[in-house]
Image (cartoon, rainbow over all chains, first blue to last red; front, side, top):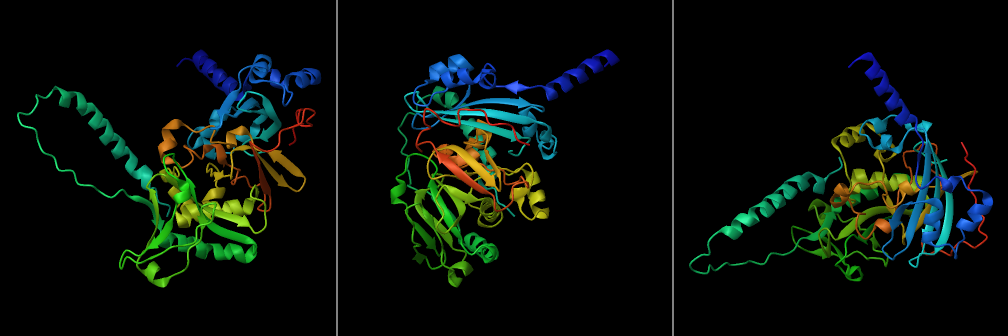
Length: 125
Length: 289
């Protein structure tokens, strides 16, 4: 491989390792307080309204019809690093930070619970 | 050493199943036999879920050291419904002597937990702890709780000890154990606190959240640590949680040494009271180092 190609490959690798990842349209962590109060109203907001405002979440469906939605924003090393055999044994993921907005919808699609979470590296902070 | 009963035999089984499926079209093309063949089918007893009595005793013996330091800790063996298709309310458990076939029935609590008596003859005869449910339909786990604690409240040290007892002694839970685990286990005091090793627990009901606390530090686990959110479907047959138990699964970071053994884990159930319209949690929490 020629030197310019090596530089490009190294730059792409560094860029992918340092990139920010997010779920949704980015608004979960970018809304103003007023917008957030309007979007996230327990007992009122519906799945469709939240999807329209915050984009598509990562969804876990419970057997009884409840759904847990997750919007995450990760800065630093991407999460897939944790799942590469042997690479995951190294303490290299402590440079990353993840914030999460977790929502619980009931079987009728109405918002019931809201939780904000933060994690530093592999552990939780 | 931990055993890996399912994973070790899964590949040949899958291969055999694939070969059978591939052979079907050819069988269909074969000309019909001139005379109907008589085939004798012999009924065979379906294997029932069972574990080693000696392994349970080994876990109980190891637990004595832990209980000496934590007198209110209580060890139980738990049985959960792993798959649909059984009536778990009809579950029964026996310690079965394979030599003289006599059996002892431990008392099974309403939550599917039990302990076993220490019986020298059954230990000597390498008895089994057998259920009346088909093999593969149940999930077994070591459980350590504190007397008087709420069912949703747990202590990190108890969870770490329960994991150790399960992996190294009782051999109850199905888990994915790559070869490197055996080498790491041989040199570590607790395999469950090694980086790269994750272990899950089942709450009593479906879980929305799990909160950890130690001193002034209070956090909630990311969704990555709930319901095995990041697991690949290819591994489902090798684990217990992939079927009816998944809603109840949470995986606190046992290997994160920044959480002391007296840290606590409290789960929030899906059916807990809802957040109010003016919920204080409707605000991003500031990131804390």
